[in-house]
Amino acid sequence: MTRRHRAPSLLAKTLGVTFVLVIGLLGVVFAIITFSVRNQVRSSVQATLESGQRVLAELESQHLQDVRAQAAILAENHTLKAALGTYVAEHPQPGADSPDPPLETVTRELDKLATLVKLDAIVLVDVLGRTLASAGPRSVDWPRSARQRFAARASAPGRMDGVVLNGGQIYRAVWLDLAVDGNRIGTLYIVNLLDEGFASDLARVSNAHIAIVKDDQLVASTLARDAAQTFARSSTPEIAEGETTLAGELFNFRRLLAVDDVVVFALGSVDELSSAAMREAMRTLTFIGIGTTALALLGSIWIAHLLTEPIGRLSNALRTLSGARGTSTKLPRTGSSRELDMLVDTFNALMASRAAAEAETEAAYTGAIRALAAALDARDPYTAGHSERVSVVSVAIGRTLGLADEQIEVLRLGALLHDIGKIGIPDSVLCKTGPLTSEEYALIKRHPELGARILQSVPFLAPHLPIVELHHEQPDGKGYPYGLHGQTTPLLARIVHVADAYDAMTSARAYRAARSSPEAMRELWRWADTQFDAAIVEALAVSLSVAPSTPAELSLRVVHA
Image (cartoon, rainbow, N blue to C red; front, side, top):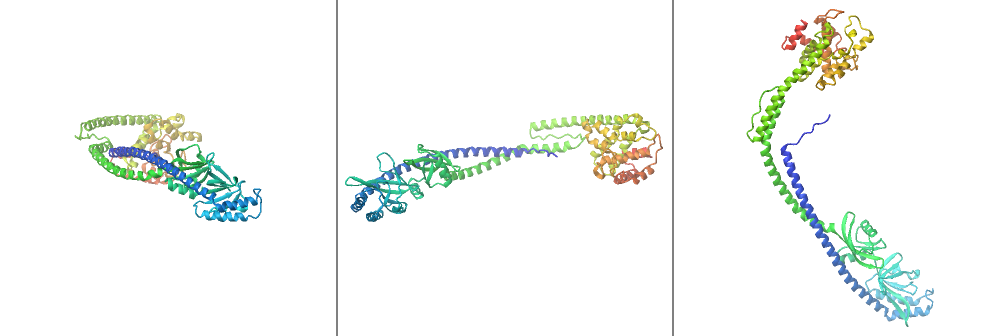
């Protein structure tokens, strides 16, 4: 069953429209504020990255100068050069394996110097790039016994600073060649590991997140791991600055350092920095929104009340008046506005027209139904008036059962039409005076279906179709056409079934005389709960025993007196 849509009230519509307008206005204001704040924060982030880049460039330049100066001092250390010279003299072929007492001296000197230099390691390598000695916190990465080679890449041609690759690790390095008597005998490296600690130090200086990338691979970062790896895959050394989205968060980025294929980027989160400003703006906007919404709602309620109060009074009066059938009462004018008074006058005119049309329609279709029933009864003089009598008996039973007026009306007209399907039965069968054959009886049993088929094309007769189609069903399921059991058959059809049987028994036929009313009632009681509904048989008995109080009951008494 489809639920009927209920339209909202005018008050609800007014409040709804106001609420939507206020929310829409606040949404526009919020969008403008969000756009403005994000642009301001984006500019602030860009300025911060630019400032961080300048500061870091200055610090990097100063750092390189300091490291070069320390490297130069180390390279001129007499004890270091003397020990290294002894080692070279004892090992004329680079890379020869033998006990290296001089290198122990070199290592001790590097250890002394390492305590003065706050870097990860000081490394001495031979001309083949093999580690001879190392000192510092990361000296274990260059074990002398392993003779591990590593590669150095300069930041620019002719420069002695850049990156050092050693065992899969990347170091920032400054180096100087060592020479004895003009001959190069090795290289001294001062290195710093590019790891999370290095990235954190840069982040503190630049006031931004740091990502160190090499060949699209992440080396170290202060970002979340997934976001940093995503950035590393999407970055290239050629891109100096730009915007990117990482894990749903907008970042500005700028290249701080580029040494060979190792690039250091600074990243600033636009969303992170704008969140504080947005929270403050949202607090202000919330207070404004609450106040605006409250004022708008109060104004809407006041305006809607002015409109809806007279309309509400008119609607209630219209609903009461329209629900009363056949009333001639006119709706009084409200006097609140010219438009509403015009609406009242129009409604009164429509109600008058409707009442007249209903009376004409009822008269027309009642006459048509009676004409159909009369046409049927005219085919057989023995059944003349049968439909009218069944209608009267059915209405009397319905009133005894306490049916509503609407159901009584359906019952009255449905009973008039209950045998309309017999129009399709040949006269040779319908008017036969002798017993019917099985084939003829089967043909007679088709009249409920034929009647329903005839009437189903007439829309206003739809409520009467169950009576016409099912008035021969029985409680025991042996009726026709469908063999329905018990209460499955509609109540009105069961009433007509009893009324039809009663009138058939109390009316004369060509092959038998009419039975008396008591005889007919005994027969009905005999087959109660099998062929007939016992409650309806009882209602018929009551209808026949009470004094007539209605035209229908009077007709019933007159017919069967």
